[in-house]
Every structure is written in C-alpha cells, then in structure tokens.
Amino acid sequence: TIDEARIEEVREEIAAAVRCFEPRLIRDTVKVTRETVDDDDLRLRYVVRADLACMPFAVPVQFVADVELDSGCVTLARM
Image (cartoon, rainbow, N blue to C red; front, top):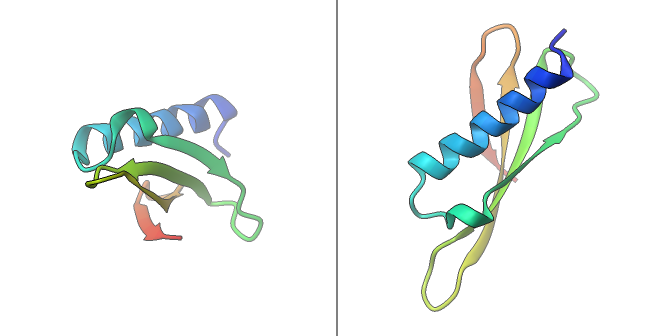
C-alpha cells in the first residue's frame, strides 16, 4: 500500500499541475482534498475545487481525480 506521506505528495502534485497548466482557474482558489474510496484499495481519489475566472464574477468548479496505484494512470471527471 501507499504510505500517508506519499498520498500527501500526490495531492500537492495534482494541485501544482492544475495551477500550472489550467490558466482559466484562479490560482489562489485551487484546493485539492483526498476523498476515501471504500470499494477500491488500488485507487486514490482527490477532489479538486477552484474558481473559474469569468466576467463579471468567478464561477466555482469541482472535479474528481482518480489515481490508479498499480499503473499511475489519472482519470479526471466532473462531479
């Protein structure tokens, strides 16, 4: 199994990637939290929340990032 320190590193890496590669999101609003998945021990789930920069005001968005432990594959989906 993956240790808790590595789980935190993955969370930070996801947040950094979203801030770097998604310019439509307001950087300071990007928050990534871990969500437990009861049915699958080979997957980590993170919920990403941020504000989309729109005029005249920002629009909140959120999506799920599932990380498969055996392959390292990441799947993104809207909530």
